Length: 317
Image 1: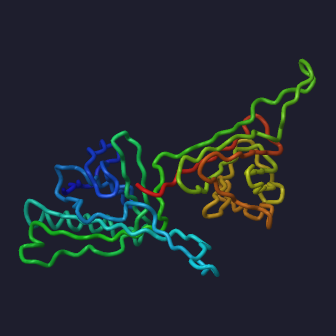
Image 2: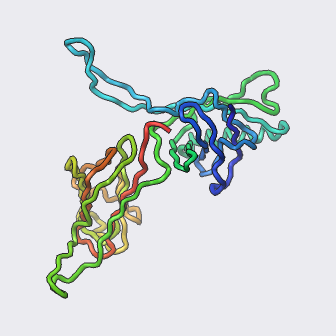
Image 3: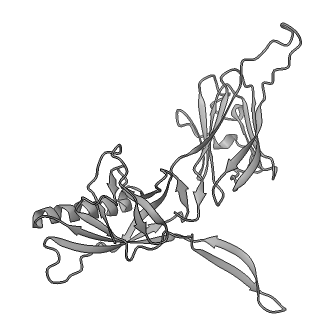
């Protein structure tokens, strides 16, 4: 059964109705090119169709297994490596006349091939309940006509190969954990009180995905030393603002720590990687399930905050 697509539309256009697809069942598919233009793939009133027969590569992540022979026979698994994913995507393109067909053919070709110059596009899969997953794609090959008699005039088809450097699907909605320091209290007023200026909190992060995620941290000052610890392994990283040219983080200033790729930048794009506690520092990931975490800021005052953000990742669409 063909799935009909539509021209680029504004992001606020309603998601087209779901259709049946191999490997994933009922879903609405949208391709988002590197410019953010959206190309719905299940609009049954448009001039190009995603041919369901022939779609592949939407299932579980491909893996390469490395093993060693066992003296008693068989082998023992030594290493598992996820591989880049390849998605095969057949399209039928048409037009009311040759000029309309040519315009559609060229527009779609550009939407996919520009991923080779401007960064990846994304394939989005939205289920009937509104939940969605996406995967970053690069055009590989396949935008060729059939080369048969009568094709290339008012209709033609192509079988795209899309290459995904990260083989996992990610949730379209991010998960965010927020911790903020409250107003500090005077120790003696109105009676002896303890108000920590260091620990924002010990908490549990729940990753609902299938594999590890590599979060992004955003720290809002004031803060002088920033330390985040993963409780189950003891891995931690510590950023000493005093050891950087920037100095302590002032009220309202922010630092963003990316764990993949490793990067630490202020809101004015200063590089603070030298402030990490190398070589001990581990920009750790969050595994599936529950993980105990401690957020600690030395020099924290009212307004100091930590925001952890990540997109859960999954084996399948």
